[in-house]
Image 1 (cartoon, helix red, strand yellow):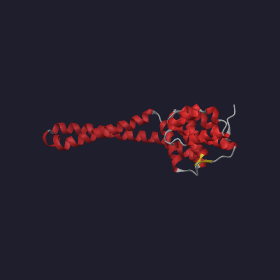
Image 2: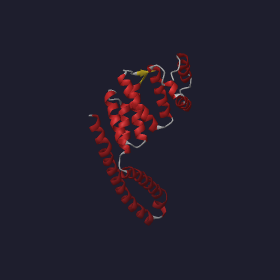
Image 3: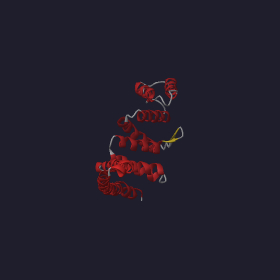
Image 4: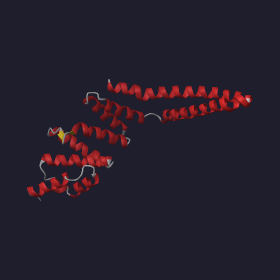
Length: 214
């Protein structure tokens, strides 16, 4: 069934009148009238699809967003549509796709898209930060655990130092000596953990980031 132009115009107008931040209303409207909306002009239908996709992304429905975003990218290339309401459709879709794959823990696809974004955006800092964020998520857990343990050891060493200065040094000399010995071991372990964690971070993030952006 084909809908007349008046019905199409009303549908499009009603959709555009939905507040941009009311993403669930946009989703409900699109899904309720998907068949009717398909009879809009090519440009209007593309615009509606973009808003629907963005609403899905805002609602954190990343899997459904990805299924639509791929079609939007393809259509934007085939029909040479770069902007919708001042937004670069191609770049914006790629950025949201990278983030969606990241949230779904598909780090390989997220990394490939983020690398593509970095190259087409004149090597922008924003997309370099996205690359770094994805690489950090791929680090072995032991590196993050070492950083966490380093903080715990540093706090413990500080507590021992304060206790030694304020209490044991003046009243309990033997205890103060024991604390100093423990502190010495803690300091050596702390330095070792920070060194290993820093080298691991560089190997899995810093080094790989340099390789990706060169």
